[in-house]
Length: 156
Image (cartoon, rainbow, N blue to C red; front, side, top):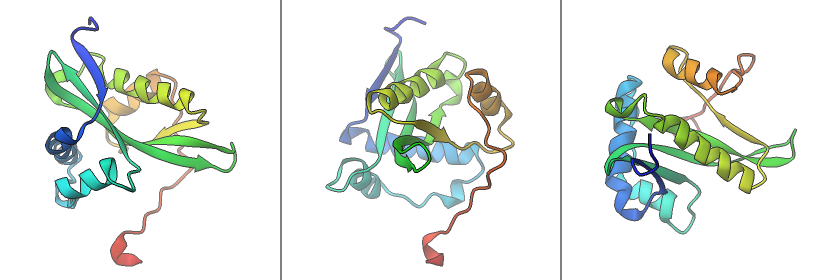
C-alpha cells in the first residue's frame, strides 16, 4: 500500500453525516444497531462544540470513506498520566485487509506519545475473533481479569 492510497485525517464538521453512518455500520456488525440513539447534532456538539471531548480520525482509501476511530482522554491513577480510550475503531468490510485499521490505531498511538499518555485502551466483543487476533498480533494485552460495568442514564 502506498501513502497516496491511504489518508488518515482529523474529522471536520462536514464529516458528521459519515461519522454517524460508520457508527451505525459498526453497530450493525456488532448486532447492536437498536442501541444507537445518537444524532448528527449530538455528535457535532461532542466533537466540535464548546465542551468538545471526543476526537475522530477518518480513513480514506483512494478517496473513499474507509473507516474511522473515535477516542477521548481518560486517566490512570496508577500511572499518574492521561491515556487515550478508543471507543470505536471501524474499517468498512470492503476495505479490510489493507492495513487501514492498523494505520488508524498507529495514529492514535502517535497522538498518545505526543501527549505523554501512559496508556491506550479499548474493548472488543469476546466473539470478534478477527479483531482479537489483530490486537494480539500487535502486542496488545487482553485484560481478562477485569469486568466492565456500566450504568446507563436511565439508571442514574
